[in-house]
Image (cartoon, rainbow, N blue to C red; front, side):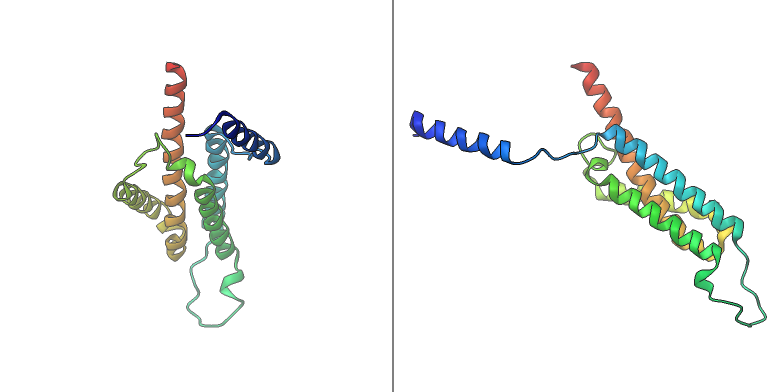
Amino acid sequence: MMTRDAIAVRLGWQEATEQAMPPTFEPSVASRLLWSSAGLALAVALAVGAAHCYEPPGVSGSAHGSTWFEPDSLYSFASSVVALAVGAWSGRAARGAGAAAARSATARVAIWAAFSLFFGAIWLEHTALFTLLIAPSHAFACLRLVGLWSRWRADLAWRRRR
């Protein structure tokens, strides 16, 4: 059993620790949802740029430049990187309490696979093999966006009930 002085010392230490440590900034679910939506829109715009610049490979066999520095390749890579960054930035907020499929890895994989097939069907005709790069990363970002959206809705419902 702790004495009154021991409790006071312990509380004093805890208060000093709390004052010494600056508060961490954690963006709200709503701001994460907003910025993630904007990031996904940018990723889709880059994928549209890749589709616009896409040219099927030539059959002549002559090297006219590096395939990796063609606009369609660069747009595809940029689109994929932005979509993966959106998914990674959404992070824990998209898997927290109230998020869609928060505890079920199987449900998240099923949602990701469905989004991958959806984006694959959209981009296949326009970007050919770059679809294998674009579709899964866009699906990952959409999976996290669905999680953020459902968590945001759960937060709204909880605030209304308070």
